[in-house]
Image 1 (spheres, helix red, strand yellow):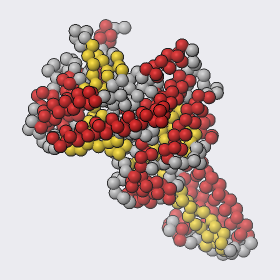
Image 2 (image 1 turned 45 degrees about the vertical axis):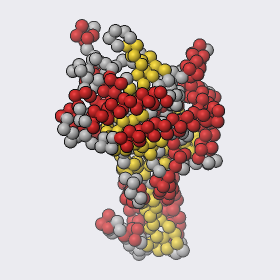
Image 3 (image 1 turned 90 degrees about the vertical axis):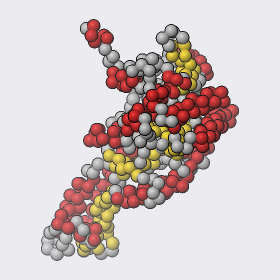
Image 4 (image 1 turned 60 degrees about the horizontal axis):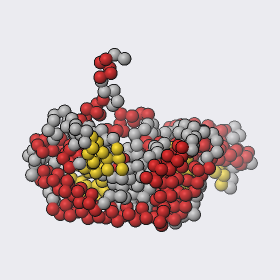
Length: 543
């Protein structure tokens, strides 16, 4: 290889440079519970309190000893990773375990079939694909129904029935001109013209692209399909032509979802035999593939939905026969004090997506759950993934669920209790720094600390970084460098710092966090931007 190439950074080089400039270019070499370790220039190992937690992936901590021991056991026993298209009983066991939790937390007798994946974004795309697969099947069944009704109309007209276009036909205007006669002229001529118009109109309407719905602020991944469910225009718009489009709904407005569903309503034309009359009628055309939401919006700034909003969503979607995809990738697996965050607000989905902490902080595991009343068995033959449902990751996921459920859900209680302590501490800081902290919100160990806009700061550093949307990352660099705290902002609300530690976070670590945050808040209150920047312009001084 050419020497110049060997010296270049080729693994996402721009991001590497950005991390260095923000003081976040640190290589962590070891991890346990809520601590990441790196080595400084002298070779000394430095512990860092990790409040990022793999964006919600480490609810039971980094390198959980039980999971690590089990992973070693599996590897020592030579458990196969590549045994595709064979029986996987452990996958069924995992699905059964999660189904029992759904029944307990949601109080439903419904069963959910499981499809396995490798990441949260892939799990979301599986739900999207299945919802569209189901919508297309409904379209096909609807088209068959209309063809059967056309044949019934032919029989009726042959027996003397009259063809009446009716309002549903007349509103087509010029498109139907000349085809709106009665049974005059040659026998059945009016019906023949009406059928031709129906088939022409329906054929065009059935080719319409599907639409997904999601709340404003949504984030569901950055793959080709899932990125279209992500509200942040910077992530979404460059790829808008590649996948089905999404309409974003301001759920804080009580009637917004119902209005959006109505605005997307489309119909097909059908024939109904009513006595001695054949009339053109309308049938609802399923255009909306699904409504997708996170019970706690993560990347939008840690924003939980409430029970009232969940009830409106449930009612509006049920009225429109619109399936609900509940994205529990970040909020699920016990992080909010229950396995499913949606259980806190009584929201039952037709689909659930799980990932992140499902792998116990070790494996890359994900799954999509589909309510049996909507499940299409044929989907299993048109979707597959090489690494999904492999023995190693699926068995790790099963053991993780066992740990969460152990001792009557002790992990859930720990998440709720320790989350409450963190929130109390943060609200105490908010009372002390009202001009800096705008809000503290969250549930369990999924918490957001929102800062007031700093773009008008008298500090040039603070103002410029705020206007560039980078202040949250600058603050993260300061906390890492000066206080050995690892905190990052949320991607679409960079004024909000996220805290997602494991259930192992201690009172001493919470006190350490409070001390570091207080120093940061003092700097912002006093508009002391100089203290926030790395001393080395290249950002290579580390933490």
